[in-house]
Length: 370
Image 1 (spheres, helix red, strand yellow):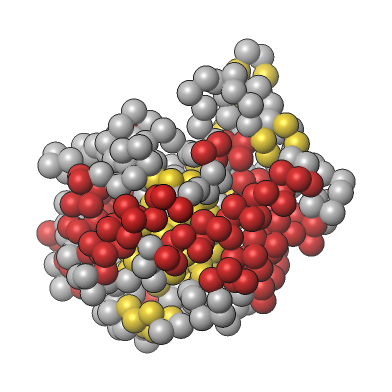
Image 2 (cartoon, helix red, strand yellow; image 1 turned 90 degrees about the horizontal axis):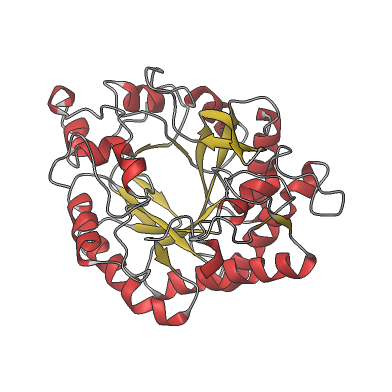
């Protein structure tokens, strides 16, 4: 039986245990570079007991930012600052993987009327519908992901994670809810997977055969019209074949329809509803794991008592990621590993963290030190 404290080796990357710090945008970046506060935040977590840190999203292009105060990796001049962040984490003996992203039709705009682009002109944020991406746009995005991965490798990160979840750009191509294309980039599963696959192949060519590549994607979308579980497993298998080493399996926990000037838009979130028992994504993650030959990371309120170990024991994942629980209590990982779950300062699911990062640094209703 796999236990939380068991080590794991991934393409030469040595993890001292099975707990992962999930990627969480902190709103701490200054001019799209790590701030002193951000470096301190990651140093604290590198010392907290986790076996792997997946660093928050860095945008691959200026027009792909998810939020105003986030990291950037769209030019070579950003590498030295990112290298300081990688070093802060890894000098503590914990591998750091950098997540890279383009927001597509969910990208942040200082002016809500600003143009966005996406797989199809399907609104998924307040503002005008995105324009459908052209072949040139798609080619440019593939190249931008590859160059961003090269920069992450140059900065000294132990690996890179492609963000293909949460209805950002790659996710928009995967889902039939947002991909209505009739060309080779849409339609059936193979068409909808094509962008993700071409990004993986371009990244793999850039970073070489031995550099660890992660893909964050959905194991499940809990709303009608989204990507099916069969789709998710099909895509995960294809991504593995194309060169992905680890699947970081998230999901869509809630969805609703918003309204902007009479125009409806799809609003989705990875957050499970308050009161929903933890581990709701785990059965889907387990079935995805059964179909793959590479490690899978589970997430979804797994800091609740006994859940992280239970997911591993049930064979539903190889690694367990904690997110909001590590904001509320940065020592939660050590407490889990030491059997002191009763001492963990519990996340209250107030979502102060989500609200705060839209305006600046992360805040928490439990962790007042933030």
